[in-house]
Image (cartoon, rainbow, N blue to C red; front, side):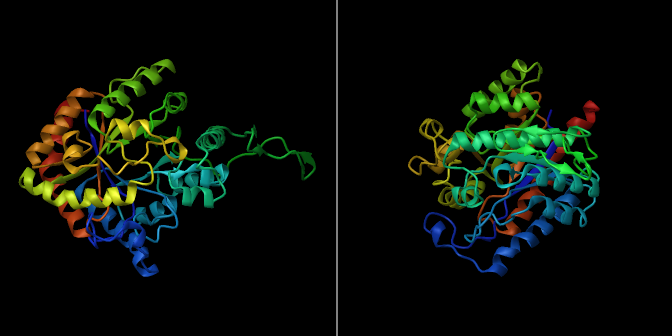
Length: 392
């Protein structure tokens, strides 16, 4: 049963500036520092607004070097700690901390501090990255997908040891923690994360992008929850089943959709036609930004192709707006249409508890606030009333 409604703000500052296929080419955008810093103000405004509306989680994305203005928040934990001071109850999702760009102990410490200071209002999320400019510039592999995943998996293992052990050690290909050295009169054999998170076990989320067996088995091994965003409905169905099967192999029986969040690039208006008119230029801007980077999953060709890090490659040809509407990778409709579609998802995946509504790149802050206001007033109460009636 759908219980939670969350929102994704990836950190864009375009504010409708030159969006769409006929607008500014993605690589020609280069905003000044004041404009790029607007992402922090937009995040604060969004957090306060969504908190007042009763949304459950605001997800944000970690990215670097994006002078083009698409994803301009480099540190989710600092951002979340700041936003928690301006809000009352909404949680903040790390969507996602890119492990290869961190030292695992540093990230574990920072999350533990934020978990304590916000009293558990930050949701931990991890990813491997998909921007070569980011990951490779931080000295980690991205073009070599196998090396990227190998590093990522070892880093996560270290973090779990740090979170869950009074003291721990690790010897692996990339890290030896602690080093074999003397310390204040004794030989160092183990260390302790100080502080450790107060909210344990730590709830961990990861995007499902390639849905490889290795990726899903890794998630199931550690009990990691998954986010599926902007993906054609036939692949959503397949990946939900495979995520469930992977967890079953790991000894965990889940209902269909349990442990998952389904995210929608969506628009609500008085009619389907009006919603599509609003959404189409935002979809086109998304393709301009994302097509070379590896995150569109709308067709068999895109799913089978691989890009940096092994994720599905963007292929601009075939990314037709009507096609993605038809396969429900994107959604546009009236409030009644939206409720009906979410009811379909709820019936198909009875274990599904969270729906994420994404703030499309290129949308203005006013568009975003109008959309979230309409979701809160015209869509969400239908499902919250169901939850209340069920007593769950």
